[in-house]
Image: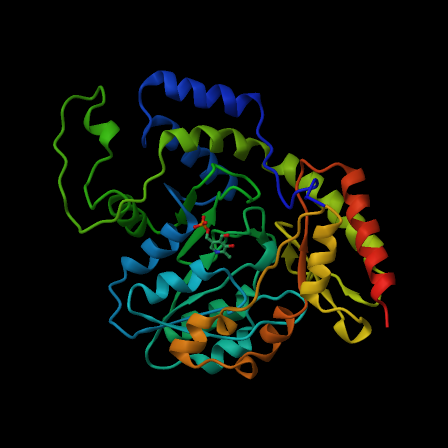
Length: 385
Ligand SMILES: Cc1ncc(COP(=O)(O)O)c(C=O)c1O
């Protein structure tokens, strides 16, 4: 059976269509007034000082590290329970990714495990707010202060997330968000790097466009001709107006989308609460969860099927599923180059064998959610020991 209830579908309205058309008709497609407007709206939403629009979250993490000029082999601590992007940016700058295991339940990095991994070469921590649940930031901030480490947050999942009532984007030195197609809001591809540090923000702006001091649209704007200057060796990762046209309407709908996802999470939580074969996501009392993805973990010792078999079975019922994640230390790249073993990060290894992400997005109907619940419960019954 082909999948008729996909894992994700973006919600794009008339406004996004009209804005993209307006941009096409304007004749100005790359970074310009629409990107600037999107940055303003985003800044307002996060409550931070600076927002720099990019073509991905990966580019944001990359810029945040690049501008530091760390030495080859310097160490950056992060979670193994993440998408390759988080650690790729470390590797590609000749830095060393050092993993610290995760906490059970939230699957976010465990601050006590971070402390064990700090060495004289540690320079930064990249906490990943897994699924939209915040990492426990107070002990992470204390470690960073004590050891003079930078905090660069991977907030790809965490647009609406708060920690102790404070919005993510205001707790570290820099924070990168994602607007990839399946994220809580999308620009197709895109990202935003935010910071409250004026000097860092200026460097990010210059570094996102070849290290030159002015964006193209300002050079040719109404204020008269002004020369641009190259002051740094920069990257090329600016967000085009074409993508920002979508983002500046998506950001206005962020809470509306969130309300629907929250309702569906409550349906899932309620339905699975009394199913001992399923571990539902934990929300700590310090957390305002963004509910980017709904990740359950199977209690495999109670089932006659493994996780991949379960994924297959859901998909065979026409429902799209995903897997966040098989931890990075289990990926062939790390096994080959870093000789990593499952027992190095036992919590992440354990969840890597058990997690399943169920569909969760505002385009779903409550009937769709009921269908997922029914399918999962039927399969549990079928494969119960
Ligand atoms: C945890 C995490 N970090 C980083 C990224 C990279 O985001 P982007 O595709 O916008 O570069 C993703 C993308 O899915 C992600 O899930």
